Every structure is written in structure tokens, then in C-alpha cells.
Amino acid sequence: MIQFLAQLATHTVALLLYPGLATMALFGSAAESIWVRVSEKHWVPPELPWHRPSAVLATVALSSMLASVQLSAPFNPVPSDERNLIVAAIALGLTVWAELALGIELFGEPGLLLVVQCCWLVAVLGPAVEPQSLRPQVLGAVLVPSLLPLKVASGALYLLCLPALLKLWPLPRPGERRARLRLDAMRVLCWWPYCGLFATLYFPPAAADPLGIVRFLGISLAVGAFCVVAGWFLGRRGAEPARGVYRRAIAPFAGLVLALVVLTSIFLR
Image (cartoon, rainbow, N blue to C red; front, side):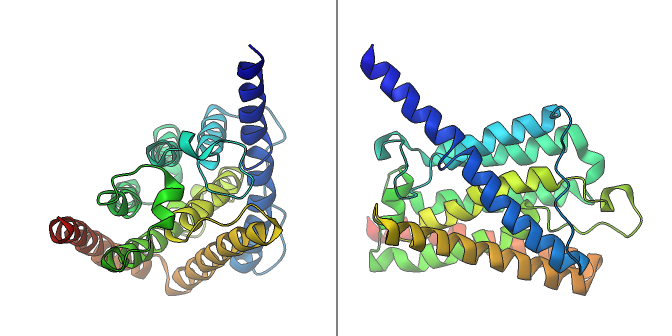
């Protein structure tokens, strides 16, 4: 009974404090403030709902919390053998599906967004085929030279998908209802799990010490900075050119990564 209560307390701390809800809110609020500053050209505080959370926001919060505890962040209270990549992928995928199902009018091109999500899943699950492990920290620790091309290609595909998945794209037309900053609170909850999962999957696990925290946080911040710059660049190009980039590039690149998965599996066998 004592062991059960201890595990319950540990998982509660992970979900609500670190690397869960509190960490998500701090990291996401900082990232969102910078994004709003860059996109709006002046400081605007994120539009956080102080009223009763909607069903969509509650679903996104719970899914993001579940994904966050799967990260290989230093001092993560959840034991490493209890973390699972499938749980993280499904939880983050659910955030997109929940928003699309209950607020589809807020998105400029939902069909293409789902294609991007499928390509993101290829980037996340592709490197797990050969190591035959679903533990995120194990995949990050794999540095076999024969797997390096697949890992680099998967990481590039992951980064290419992030601006769309974080709703920095698709870009709404000026004056439309969805052009308002209505999804900020949901995006705040998604910055940390998306950026932290990249640091988990494509870099060796950081040590459980202050330097390890700085390293993991630094990589996550670098991913967030990339998303801000990419979103800003897409915004300068305009809605149609930005959509064209994703229509022409995302699926073929995902196909290339999938081909690398197959070739790597055959070569290593």
C-alpha cells in the first residue's frame, strides 16, 4: 500500500509540476510571448482563458501532460522503463484531433494539417523500427553510424512539421475569424512536449544534474526558436506560398524517410 501511494505521488508530481503542467505553462508562456512579439511586431500578453476551461482546452492539457512525462528530461520522476514513445505520439496526436474535431472552423486547411501530422508520426516512429524499443531515452541514446542518416532525416522532418502542428501555420487570411489569437492557450500547452520530445529522440539523454537540465532545456529552446523563425519566415512569404511549400515538400520528404527506414532495416539485418 505504501509503495502504491509513493508511486501515485511520484506520478502526480510528474504530471502537475515537472515535467508536466507547471513546466508546460512556464516554457509555453515564454515561447508564446516571443512568438506573439515576433508575429505581431509588439508585445502582447498571451490570451489565456480565465473562465472555465473548454472541453478542447481540457483535452489538450491532459494529452500534453501525458506526453510531457514521457520525456527524458533530467530528474523526471517517472521511471525510464515506464515511459513509452507510443504514449507520447498518441497524446500529442490527440491534441490536433481534439482541436480539429471541436473547432475545425479555426483552421485554414485541416486536410493538409492532418497530412503533416502523419508525416510527423513517420519522423517520430521511424527511428524506433531498428532498435526495436519504444523507450524514448533508448532511442535518443542510439548513435550507431548506420542509423545516423535515418536519425538526421527524421529530425529534419520533425522540425519541418512543427510550425504547422504548433499552429504557426497554416496562416489565416487577414480579417477572418480564425485570424484572432484564440488558440494561444492551447499552443502554450504544446510548446514544451513537442520541443522536449525532439530533444529526447534525437540527442543522447542528459545527465541528472544541473548541467543536464541546462543541456536539455537549451536544446528544447533551440527547437522553439527554430519554430518561431520558421513561422515568421512563412508569414513573410504569405499564406499561399507557405501552403505550397508544405504541399510540395512534406509528403515527398516523409516518403524519403520511410524509404530510409526500410533500407536501414534491410541493411542491418
